[in-house]
Length: 249
Length: 335
Image (cartoon, rainbow over all chains, first blue to last red; front, side, top):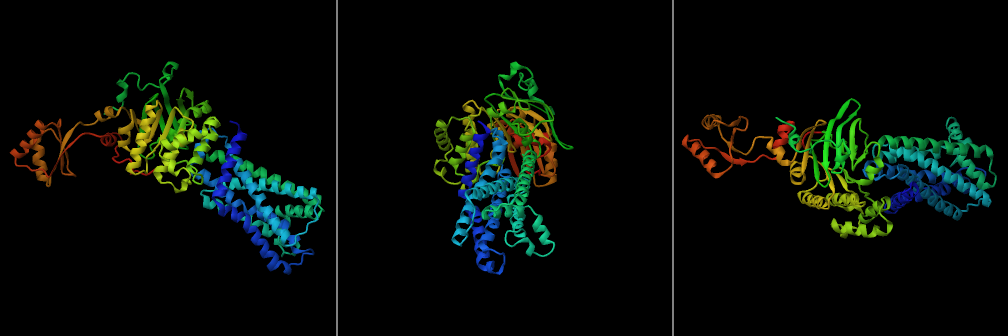
């Protein structure tokens, strides 16, 4: 059997896992919405960002939604490794890549569900983007690319962790990172030190790219670094995951 | 003590170096070595498992049993020696070996979030089984392992015995001709253990070859056609259960006394006996027949010696194990 069909079998398995373990989906889909409601209703008026706060915050929250899904991915990958089922797959000559690809694709699809729900709620709250169809396709492209990049990095983290619990913890920095970017407030409103960090960390150009697409004013000054970061993270995550998998298995 | 019991048997132990031997050998291992960094785990192992038999690798924790299974099942590369499984070289023809074998490891390799049926279906999807036969194969295995009632429940709700059964059922999906069972009953209650044993016997009746590791002597004694005793990475004895039992002192009578004085007297009176001062016991060779027992008791009576306890003992594999490895209960020593 080919790698491709094994990947599909594995992906189906990962999806069944998601339906059996609804709390992780709940966490991935609901948490970003809760955070959105919190920021928009509680703090939104306090921030002066020049536009409607919901219009400012939605792109950042989309990225946050990607990150919230990662904890479940890391835990799931680690469970596969520590619970022995991986040995069965290996003896059956299942392509090793198929197991990991299944996790990454499941992670990206969870991201898309979470973001669709988030954007739906954003519209209810008065989100009014001026993006064209092409702009929306750009948004989708960036999110899928980011999802793949973060997914591979998370799979690597999950493979490196000793137990499913530590694997879940290992993804926490990825969940925190969006808060120290231009997701919630513009970087130039932050204190010294934090401001520089926020300006140069990878999530800021990615968020600015999403903002650009949604406003109908994408700027190549953001798009190019955003794509570079995504490709870089994906490559590092993939290579790291592959070598850890070979070593561990 | 001789450790090479099987050498006298006709070709039973010879590694399959030539092609002619391969037809009857399911597994042939010669000079297998494996070390992790400085620690030598397997130190030159020779094994030969004829097709359609149960072979048991017996040894304490840390003896190298799981490493042997891992090498034989292509999960780990050997440092030296040759390993042929189903006629294929485990190092260079891993794919062909994997197609011929099934493995049930020490820890149930089942997917806890899936149901029993879904676990089996997963195996069907990943194996060579044609999709149209998949449903029938799954249903048959569920029935055979008495798991039909729980088939729709997630495995996380299964008991230890049910998990092992499902694990073995998953191994059988592709109808492998050679099955490796790494400590299949460790941690199971006595009833589940017996169920597992009868399943294993049924498999062999169908012509499957079983390579079984265990730390339970009784298990090896019950199931195995041949046993190899592994200790610190070496095979210290190999043969049928009976051959191994013949290696140690035969049937004897064990007498237990309450005082050292009584033990002294008895030892003097009975002559050819072995004493165990710590237990205040005396071991007297005997054929276990009533005539010789009466003679023994009469002799004790004659000297007015009364023993506190009296038992006739036939050697079991426990004794063999003790004699060969110097450890009585293999389960105790830590990894």
